[in-house]
Image 1 (cartoon, rainbow, N blue to C red):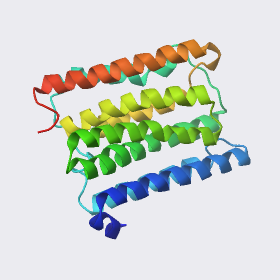
Image 2 (cartoon, one colour):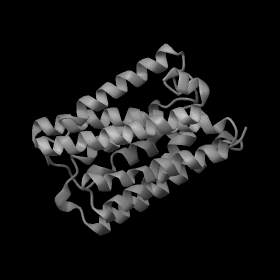
Image 3 (tube, rainbow, N blue to C red):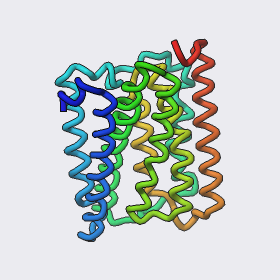
Length: 242
């Protein structure tokens, strides 16, 4: 792994993306066949998270990939209130236990790991590999790749309209997360928000959900994400490229 990283950081990022997508898709399908949601996904995501964290720590890359203290002024970032609004969107229409207690625990545990893995892969490995030559390009590629990567959910049984909406707001969320990391130097606000968004999705009141409400939620997440990102850029008083 270190040899690939030293040779080409972009190739290293791509390897992690492919590895993540393949392992999670296989784990999801096997979990479904077993009959217990996330039964294999949970341990797989945990193992990958531990391996990734230990590798970053061992090679002294925690600061480079944002596993460090937030360096920005929290007040300037509006105390991350927009992130709280984004994180709680899934339960605005109420919440309920949609799975068994065991499956809910496995799901939330998996999503906490997913929040860490996806942020480090897309905002860390991929963004940092590209931004060495072009920051604007890195921001766009990191955001779009993250969003369009959710198309893999179609392979795991998700509906097409739901997946398309998810891809749309994921691009916007990826954009604001990238800006937060680039300006604040820490991935933790992004990791925590990402994990909460994913975890609360399983507690959403599915009976109160309609296509119209899904579209409204998508628009809300896009507007808040893009608006917050532009606010941060303006508040910092600098161009994106420094």
